[in-house]
Amino acid sequence: MEFFIDTADVAEIRDLAATGLVDGVTTNPSLIAKSGRDILEVVREICELVDGPVSAEVAATDFETMLAEGRTLAALHRNVAVKVPLTVDGLKVCKALSDSGTRVNVTLCFSPAQALLAAKAGAAYISPFVGRLDDIGSDGMELVHDIVQVYSHYDFPTRVLVASVRGPAHVIEAARLGADVATVPPAVIRAMYAHPLTDKGLAAFLEDWRATGQTILRTKGEAA
Ligand code: E4P
Image (cartoon, rainbow, N blue to C red):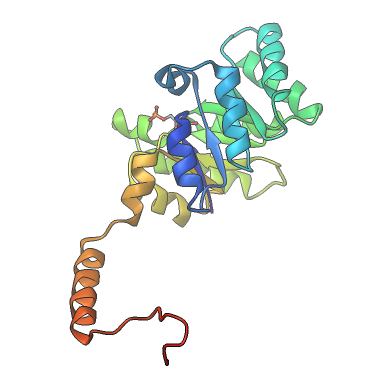
């Protein structure tokens, strides 16, 4: 499973990219607004930090303007995947950009029918928003399950990118269902490292180690 980071915060991306576990980045208009930065500048900068797909979203809603925006974003860097909303015009843009070799991430997917249309439009990624479905009392993971199942019967180029992730449990469930990618907010990635028994066990190991008086790193000339 691949991990993308769901943020437009360059400092966070730089920090997490250093772990070597980051396969890509997703942004959206709200995340760009939160960063307080110019979209073209920030996307270019992210592309230099992470050698993987960086989703940058169009902001218009009509075909012509979305297509022009998508081309502008795609021209920024070879890593850019253009993000379009799951609307009729959004999928027309998806088809046009995909046909010309640009990767497209179709976002705001809330049903298997929408995911099927995106796949037929040549999307490189479909983004089901699990957290937002959970928020309204639906089951976001059921949608992921349905999309994975539907896609399994065909040879679509579309990868299932689980979005709107709220916690480590979403990531694990997405992996269990065979989703290709999860895009994870930085705080959730950090939470995935944590377990109280890890902290407790490490504290005990360190205490026992201190009692031995040993060191592993020796200066030159010191006998092993
Ligand atoms: C995905 O590409 C979106 O940017 C993101 O996952 C939306 O998540 P939210 O529902 O937490 O805003």
